[in-house]
Image (cartoon, rainbow, N blue to C red):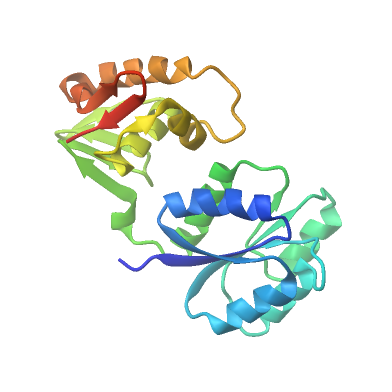
Length: 225
C-alpha cells in the first residue's frame, strides 16, 4: 500500500525530527518544512498530502497565514502546534478550519494517535493497516485488542504497546535502549530493567506464544514467528 504523506512544518529542526521519527514508525511518508513559505511551496508542489502538522510561531510566515492559504484551496486535515495556551488562539484555529489543536510540550505518541484518528475520521486509513498477525497472535491497533487463536488476551496499555513494537519489528534484534526510546518515549529516564519486567508479564499473558519473544543475551529481545 502507498504510504500516506504528512507535511510537518516547524522552525525547530529537533522538533521536526522527533515528530518525523514517530510518524515514520507508523509507515507514514514525512515531508519537512522549516518555515511557512517553504511549507506552501511543498504543499502545492506535492500531490496527495494526507495531513499537515503546522507550528504557529514561525519566521517569514506564521502558522495562521499558512493555514489560511491552504484553506483557500484544500480541506486537507490540519493539526496546529503551539507553545501558547491562549483560548483566543485555539478559537482562531477552529475558525480557520483546524482539525486539532495541540499545545507544546506534547507526547509524540499522542500526536501520532491524533493523526491516525483524524485520518480514520476522514476515511484515509485502510483497516488492514491496523491489523498485525504473526504466529497465531492477532493484534488490532484500532480496537486495542489482542487475540491468540481466537481467544482474547487482556494486556495493559504498555504491554500492548510493547507487543505492537515487537510484531512491527518481527525478526529484528532490538536493544533495550531502542525499546525504551520507541515504547517508553525519548524523554523516559528510568531503569532499562523495566523492560525486562514488562516482557516477563507479557510472555506470561501470551502463554505458549510467549516463547516467540526471544531473549538476546547482553542486548535485548527479538520477536520471531
